[in-house]
Amino acid sequence: LGDWKFQLGTEGSAWITLGYKDGAFPLLTEDFLLAVPLSFRHNKFSGALAFNHVSAHLGDGMTILLEDSLSDEDQREFDLYDDLAEEEGMDLSLSDPEPYSRDFISLYLSYEYVVDGIEHRMYVHFGYAHKMIPDGLGRTFIGSGFEAKYSCKYFTPYYSQDITWNEDSDSVDYSYQLGAYILPDKDDMFTVRIATTGFIGYDRRGQLMDNKIKKFGLGLFIR
Image 1: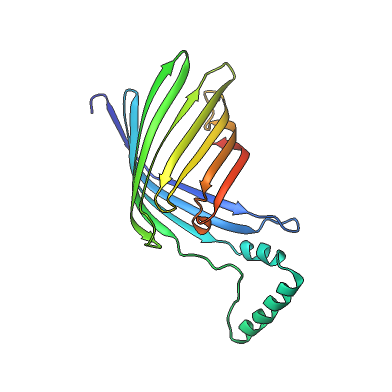
Image 2: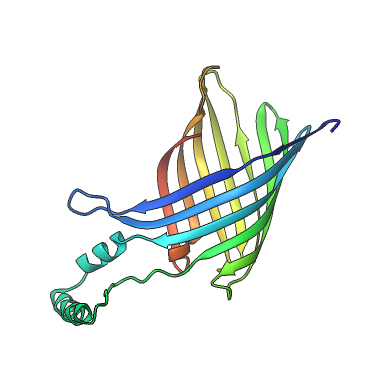
């Protein structure tokens, strides 16, 4: 439509948290996202209007790790109650999953520009959950962020950050990445980047969202 470009697609993502015990990696949490975005672009302005579904699940590895943290006295008491529960045909667990699901509409708007050879992208994003479990949580979020990168011959260093207010936790959450894109060959199907990462705020994993956390790490991202 003139200088406007539109694209309708589907997206799917999974966030999986693993623990470690006796050479194995027990599953702790699983979060899934399915989305149908309508993307658009006009010159340096772009954005997306999307319908999203998120669900969160608790893995049995959480119970395994919690049992390991019990003192000997607590372990004996737990075993006693576990035996009583088995006699009644019930399963006793140290961790109970919380029902967590939401459908929400999101809008993302960004603008790109170049200053002294450094490419900048600034954006804002909004969202409203029209259906959610549990239903007593806040339904909106609003945030903004930016990315700056400078193209070199073999790699592209970049910095990005995001600040978002989430009504469900009534918190302002901050995240960042500092790293570099590895410039692909023209026949490569994926882009690769390596970055240090950080997050300060309330955990966005549905089963752990009441926890305030600070996380820092090093990531390899392939897309």
